[in-house]
Each structure stands twice: as structure tokens, then as C-alpha cells.
Image (cartoon, rainbow, N blue to C red; front, side, top):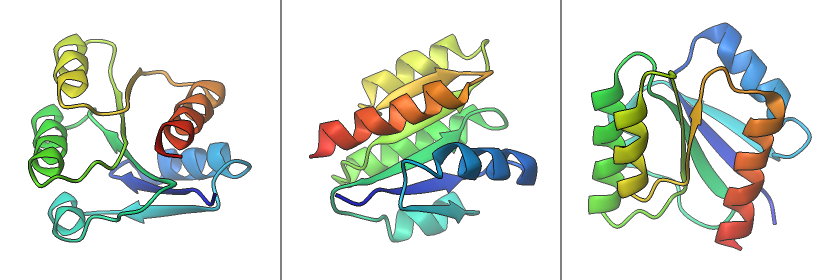
Length: 122
């Protein structure tokens, strides 16, 4: 099964790190700049997931995941957030996101989260 990882937000250097980290396990890494645009046309099908950042705006990230679930979109979501975002991690879990990874995130942790997503959707 092919794997496409959609990445929402993140600074340019973080995007390069994510793309490099996932190069061996993802067939495609697609960057998304706008959550509303992503929400308007969410991807579907097996082998897809979203990596979103909760660093800058935790409420917006929660809102996006909540809106996806309310629309019946079961796209796995991996959220990267700061150590101080315990409450966000709990809320993300309640919204049935796939994972919350506390920063700093290692390459191994990120790859493992994407691998778990693939096994959950196959």
C-alpha cells in the first residue's frame, strides 16, 4: 500500500526535517499551508495521514481535528506539540486522532507513528 503524508503548518526547516525523516517510509509527503483549505477537500483512502503542529495555535489544531471528525473524515492525525501541551494531548486523544508526539520528536518516533497509522488503516 502506498503512503501519503499530508503535513500542515511547520516552518521551512521543520518541513525539510519531516520530509527527510519520512523519505524511506512514505511514497509522498505533501505540505499544506491552510487548514481551512485542507478541511474543504480532505484526502481519503487508505495509506494517508495528516501531521499537524500544535506549537503555535493549539486551539486551531484541535478545531481542525474536531471538524474532520464531525464531517466523518477518519483520516489518521498525528499531532506534534510542546511538552506543556498535556491538555491538548488529552483532547486530541478524545477526538480519536492517531497520536500526539511531544517535542522534541526523534526521527524514530515520527516514523513509528506513521507506521502505526499504516497498520491501523490497512
